[in-house]
Image (spheres, rainbow, N blue to C red):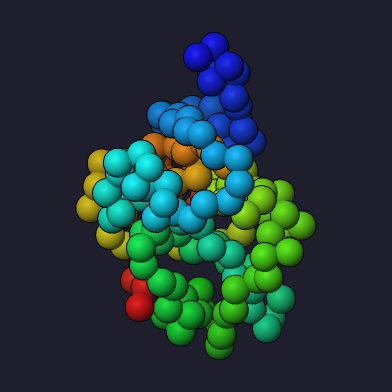
Length: 160
């Protein structure tokens, strides 16, 4: 148990520095498992458990999209809400280079560079949501308004 208290990710340092309240959730996970499996493992509702996806546009910009784990990103809606003609998912091998995080531990908080972030509008319906904590086996429970404010993002409809 003492070891759990020692875990501090870049995402948590970012929140601490900005005095944002959050809860840390630690769970067993050595290899990649998707967000649906994480939610099931922790008994969290899918609609409150969010995944982080990173895209890029032909103009060379990167964008971050945060959506419920059981939903799919609508690339056309995503492009429209960031005023691009189109966006596409970055390749899995590029996740660490672009974000500083690994697959299964990617979070919109404390990336190498702060990219424009869009959180699916349903997040605003909740007092708190669950997102990756910046490392496999770590989640952060955070107020969605705090999340959008700290990443200077917005809420929008981005799912199929």
